[in-house]
Image 1 (cartoon, rainbow, N blue to C red):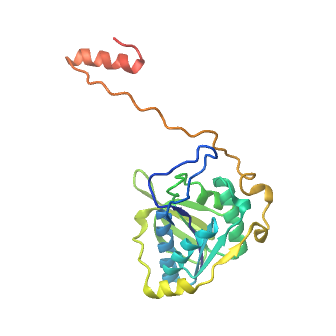
Image 2 (tube, rainbow, N blue to C red):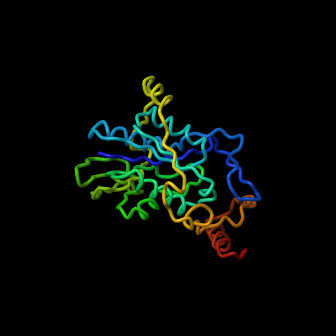
Image 3 (cartoon, rainbow, N blue to C red):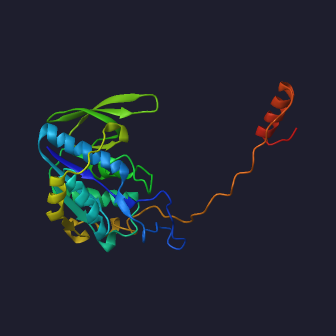
Amino acid sequence: MNIIVCIKQVPNTTEIRIDPVTNTLIRDGVESVINPFDTYAIEEAVRLKERLSGKVTALTMGPPQAEKALKEALSLGCDEAVLVSDRKFAGSDTWATSYTLAAAIRKIGAFDVVLCGKQASDGDTAQVGPGISVHLDIPQVAFVKKIEDVSVNAAKVERMTEEGYDIIETPLPCLLTVVKEINTPRLPSLKGLMRAKSAKIIRWTADDLEADPGSLGLDGSPTRVAKIFTPPPRKGGEILKGCAGDVSKKLVGLLKGVVI
């Protein structure tokens, strides 16, 4: 079984800073790590390989330093790692990012399952995984909490919902985005760390992907960040006192925007 796991390197902080001129994330001086949700996708990919045999390829799009995240993925059990990096990818929104990753997956070759974390901690859109499935024209299931069974032609999974979960069967190849409830990620072994240290990262540019230049980077991004601002602080609340009848009338008036 050929499994591809898409990962992202994100800032290791909860205090995301935005450049007021470019409206993009300020990454300088901020330590980067594998997106926490992607660690669960890596673990599930390795578990599938251990159950069914095969190969796991870690894939990311980013600057040259994203190689560090791929090295970590290799130390956790992935077999190969691919970095797509090019200035032409700069400014990509979720649509252009998913297009680029889909082009890289096509270049990797035949696959059975693509795994992604449910969302990235810096963007929180949960759009890239489903976007990849659209560009590849394959079925996808989001918020997967358990992979019950995988056969030659289909996968049976549990998808988490607000009320509980759905059991879904999907044909292969498919794309799955996973939630943190699916497993507990392992720590890298000494053998894994030694192998990752000497492993060669495959690097591809935009030309290697033979992708449409108009679909890459800022030019290929249909969304734009026009303005970023901090919402004004909320005004203090009011405690209503009195008998139930008076309080209810005043509350209704407040809800309607009329002071009684």
